Length: 96
Figure 1 (cartoon, rainbow, N blue to C red):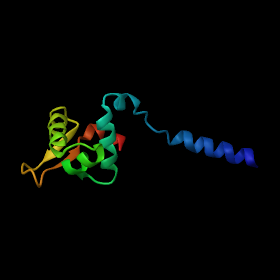
Figure 2 (figure 1 turned 30 degrees about the vertical axis):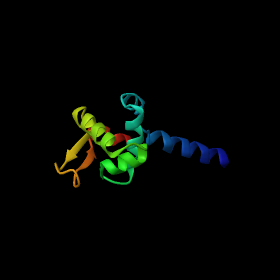
Figure 3 (figure 1 turned 180 degrees about the vertical axis):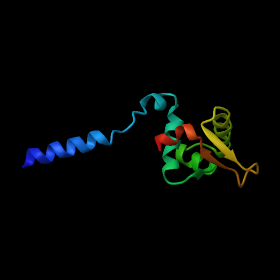
Figure 4 (figure 1 turned 90 degrees about the vertical axis):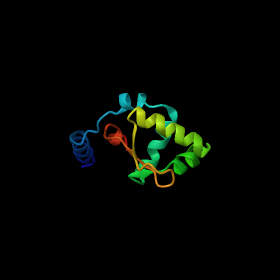
């Protein structure tokens, strides 16, 4: 009886195979990998949240965000400093 349950669970697990994203993860630097965790709770994040997570100054976080927008890691929404927010680019959504 127990063996039958194990076989059933194994076959169900095989049907719902997860995609291996390790190659995609290797393209990200350590900070980007940490920032991915912010997108698990929210569709949009701010430079303040990034600065707090990485324990860096807000200006440094802003510079990182500009770099990440250029590299298409994140998408910027809004131009004003106080209302600017960022969304994860579609390519990286599978990692969240």
